[in-house]
Each structure stands twice: as structure tokens, then as C-alpha cells.
Length: 391
Image (tube, rainbow, N blue to C red; front, side):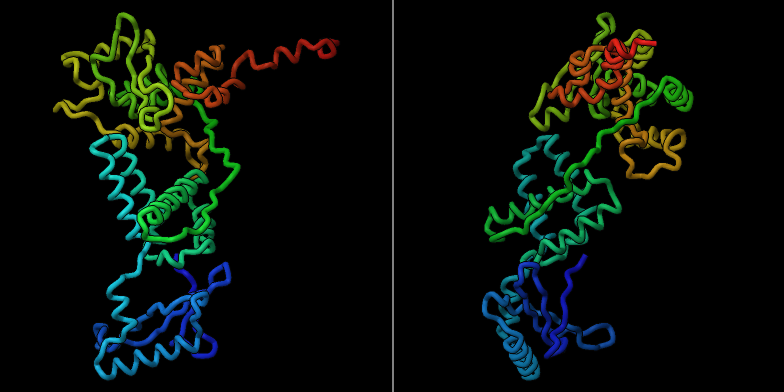
């Protein structure tokens, strides 16, 4: 996305301006540079920032600067305006983003979770903020940000839009903290987002999944572990042989989300269903205590893409045809297995506080969305009101 720079009505394209939403104006001089030619030897257009209206700059002054540049160009001299520009290159969002990420990487000190978060944020930048990468940050206005926000709302989920805006704010505020910027535009995120997943797999759908992956033992083990523990993808990938106690029917699990955020318990206990035990015993066969359960024959741990990519293809074929790709509530994804674990516990009458502990939720509010699935959700109590018992 580019800002709208217009030509002067009085002087034409040699004087250009950008109108800020706060009423200020940035003025530019535009000319064809004989020092910068295209492949056919033609002079290339150059736009130089002269200054702001609030600094006393006028169109007449910019026109005079333009004429000065043209005159000095003919004499083979470098105008003062261009010398200043060479000394201090204009700051773009990409330059500030590189500084921001470099600083975070220095602070990470090899922390794997911090490194992962940086990698994720770099992906957010390259996918959702890249249109502003070459934007001159001094004239990055609320209007430009709002246009990007409106555009992204049509392309991705509201949560993704807010993640991009949060990153943009972090980059600009970091630039202020190190003296690269004096102020930042106001960045307002989307409000009232209800992005909670409602989709869970029924017993029949689980049977369809297991049938579709019956020849892939790694995927089968992952699905069974998900439905027995509710663990996230990274949590299950990290399980080592030493974490499993078949006799007690327990697994030591690591909640990497809680670990990286500092909220909740990073380690918690999962439980092995009787049906899962023989599958786990087979997966542990001939492995050492520090070996991973999800491991290739050469000893390397199976990647997230292997599990997520293959399972997602199965879910798309079985359940997602015709659904909008941004329909986070109803699309079946790998995380739906975790949601299914909690949902089926609630349907089976498991107390909400037990579900909270099994899901390792730091806040009971995260678990309460499953309460509506419980058989003791208040429906029976309402039916006991005397007037509803009358025939």
C-alpha cells in the first residue's frame, strides 16, 4: 500500500505534496535526474522531501528549490538538498523492522521459545505488513494504517489482523525508544472479536479420521494422544520415552504456550487411555529414555509440518469442503483435536475444574466455554420449574 502523493495545482508535478489527516502537508520537489538514467539512457524521475507545512514550507518555496536543483544539475553540481539526503537516508518501516528484530534476537540469547516467537513475527511482517515495508515512517499516517487494516479484514481473520497491528505498534514504539522516531501514529485494533473455536469432532467423525490415517502410524498415534491428553502439537512432539509411565497411565507434558508467556504451569500431567496404552508400548519399543515418541528411523524428531500438513489435508477432504478459509470457528484444523478432548469431557459430565486441570488452562474463563456442553448445564434444572412440569 502506498501513500497518495499529488501534484500541485499551481506548479504541476515539479511540486508534490502529501496531505496528512491532521491537516499538515509534506512537500516534495520532483525532477528528472540526468545522473540517473534508465536502460534506454533516459533521465529518471527523482522525488526529494523538502519539508512540512508546519515547518513553514510553502509550494512557492518548493518550486524555488526545484528550480535550484535543475540549475545546479545543468552546472554539474550537487544541490545541498541532495547532499543532506545522502547524509541521512529516509527511514522506512523495513529499516525499523530490521533494527527491531535484530534487537530481539540479541535479547533472546538462544532461548528457543523467544527465537520461535521472533520467527513467527517475521512471518507476520512478510505476509501482512510487507505492503508498508518501503513506507517512509515520518509520513506513516493513521489513514494509511486504516486502509491496510480494511484491506486485510477482507483477506484474513480478525485475529490475524490484530496480530499484524500489534507487531506494527511494537516496531514503531521500539524506534521511538532508541530515538529513531519522535512520535507514532495511533494504531487501533479490531474490537469485539469472537474467534473462539466451536468445532469439535463427533465419535463418527473420529472414526472417519482414524480410518483415513490407518496406514500412517505416526499420525494415528498423534490423534490418539491428542484425544487422550488434549495436548497441543508442540507439546505432543516433545514427549520423550522417559515422560511416559505406562503402569500408572500418566505422561509428563510441557505446555510451551504457558512457558513462553509466563502464565500458568509449564509442566502438567496427562493421562493415557487404556486403548492408547498398547499403541504407546509399540511406539516406545527399542527406544532409549531420551528418545522422542515422534521420531524418524534415523533418530531425528518428526517435524511440525509433517504432522500438521498431512493431518490438515485429511481434515480438508473430510470436513472443510465449501467452508471459507477464514471461518476459524467451524473449520477443522489440528487444534480441533484439543478442542474435541475438552468438549467430549464436558459432554461426558466431567466437572469444569477437572477439565481446566486436564487442559492446563491458567484461567477458568478459558474452560467455561465448554460448560454449555455439560449434561448438567442448567437445562434439567429449568425443566424442574413447576410450571413446566404441568401437562
